[in-house]
Length: 90
Image (cartoon, rainbow, N blue to C red; front, side):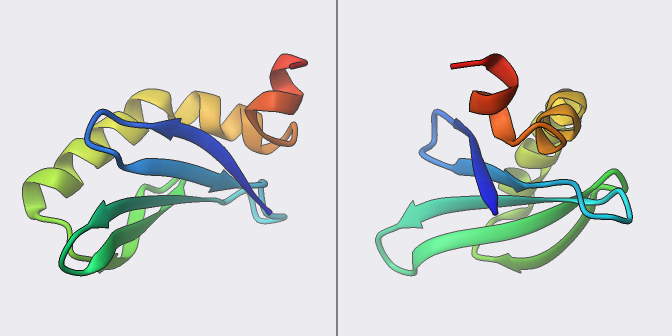
């Protein structure tokens, strides 16, 4: 299951999984692109291990990495509570 987290000002959407039994959480970044349809990448928390990177520049990836690091504590919490909507009670 993937839970919506945020849409950034460049139209990139960030979603995350539930926390896996080994404590990892999959964070998926996807951004529409006119040429390639979508650019995407996966970051595994809590190690911030990036994989399956397609289409993003180094600068874009650095921006997403910085953002994810700044909100990782929230993603890790929400991943244990069924996403933001369940964690917030909305």
